[in-house]
Length: 344
Ligand code: SF4
Image (cartoon, rainbow, N blue to C red; front, side):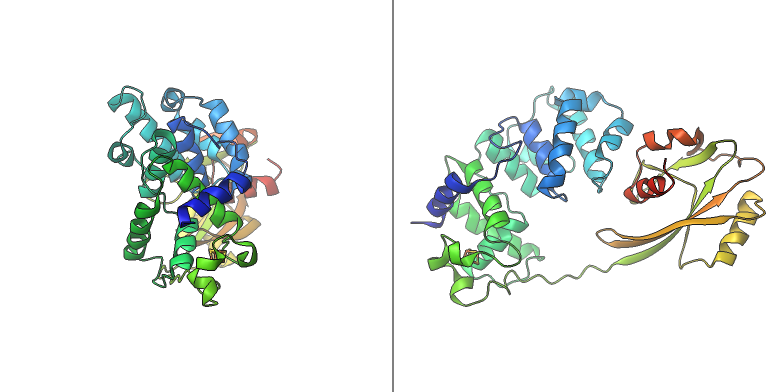
C-alpha cells in the first residue's frame, strides 16, 4: 500500500470531528484555517462558531467595523490575523464581486493568506491539488522519508512540498491534506508518537532507525526581544484614559491604558517620578505586574494607579471613557487579564 493509500484508509476510520469538517464553503474553510494557525483546536472551536454566527458571509465580515472584528477575536492573540481577514474580505468584495476566488494564485494574493492556507482552501473548497504543508505535515513527512534538514529553513519546506506534490491525490486533494493534518495531530505527534500502532510503521525511516524523537530537526534562530511596559491607570470620577495602539507594532488598533515603554525595568522611584512629571500626581500605587511571552517578544508589564486632580490633555489617539466601559473595548490579552484582576 502506498503512503497516500495508507493515509486515506487511516483517515476513513480515525478522522477528527471538527465543526468545519466536510465544509466546502471557502469562506468558512478560510476562517477555520486562520483561527487554527496559532490556536489549539479545542480553543478555536468556540471562536469559529461565534465568528461564523456574527459574520456568516464574506459580505457581513467586510461590512463590519474593525473594532467589532477585533473584539470577537479577543483572547486568541495574533490580532494581525483578524485584521488581515477583515481586509481580505473587503478585497473579495471589491475585486472579486464578493465571490471567493477559485484559483490558487488569486487566493494566495489575499492579505494574510500564505502558501499553507491558500493550499488548504484551494484543495478543500475547489479540489485543486495543492499540498497544505504545516508543522504537522512537515513532521510526518520528515520522519517518514528520513529528512534531517532544519524544518525552519525554506529549502526544507520546499523539499517536503515537492514530495507532497508527488503523493497528493489528484481527485481528492482536500482529503489528502486533512488526513495528513489529523495523522500528525493524533498519531505522529511531536512528543511520543504512537509508532507501535502506526500504519506507516513498516516503511517509516525514523522508526526503523530509532530517530522519531530526533526528527524533525528544528533549529531556532529567533532571538526573543524583551520589552518593558509601564501602564498608568488614571482614575478620576469613575472615568479613565485609554489609547489606541498605532504604528507598526504588536496589538495594532487595540486599546490600552497610557503606556510608557523603556529599555529596561523602571524602579518604583523612577515610576513615581514619571507619574509626577507626566500627570502631576503626588503619588501612584502599584496594582499588578506580569511577564508574558509572545512569539518573538517577552513583555514585562507593570500597572500603576494614579488619581490625578484632573485627567491630562488627550493626544489624538487617546480618549476618556467610563471605567465600566473598559470591558467593551478590544484589548490585548495582557490588558484583559489586568481588567480581570480589577474586576472590570
Ligand atoms: Fe510517525 Fe512513528 Fe508512524 Fe513513523 S512510525 S510515521 S515516526 S508515528
